[in-house]
Image 1 (cartoon, rainbow, N blue to C red):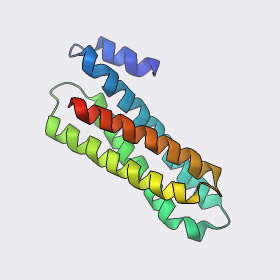
Image 2 (cartoon, one colour):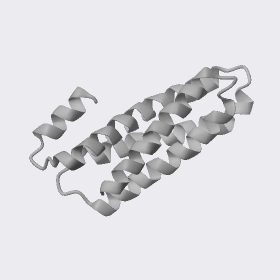
Image 3 (cartoon, rainbow, N blue to C red):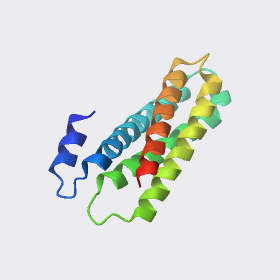
Length: 134
């Protein structure tokens, strides 16, 4: 677990330990997925067969943006709107599934796609776990 995410959760006056573990895991995985997807899109653009990776680039960029937004929403804990939070996590989960599936199509040829798909699957699972607790 990220030391910063844990420290922030522990210092928040609205801390709820049973919920916090799932929340922190989701924040961490969303942040990792944001970075992995942005890096994968960049790597795809540098590949000689970039035209065959256009859909992958698009799903990478979409997933990166959704994960960044979800990280921000989850990091704000005062006066939580559960409807908005749930919608953001559900969108993140859907985006991670789409991105993982697309990256898996290219994983045998591009290591960055393999790595990205794995990170997306971890984020997908963290989103599922958090949704069960919302």
